[in-house]
Length: 104
Image (tube, rainbow, N blue to C red; front, top):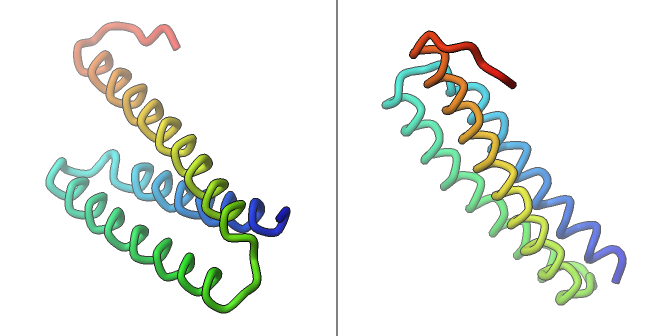
């Protein structure tokens, strides 16, 4: 069961790391570039998570409920962190364009 939890959380963490890298790399690019790379990255990461999940559940004896639960919970946590990160960056960007000092 522990293997399922570790595998689910690990795959979600890799997905979150990919999202963070994509946002970090494209944040200073044009909005059109950001959208293309970010949306393409979402599709690619979704496909990789699906393929990884299929391979793990089909070819191993990993505990399916533990894996699925850990994947979903960790995925949601990383999504919340990702949204907060993007919103903070957007707020700082907006404040720097307005010429106001950034309190953070």
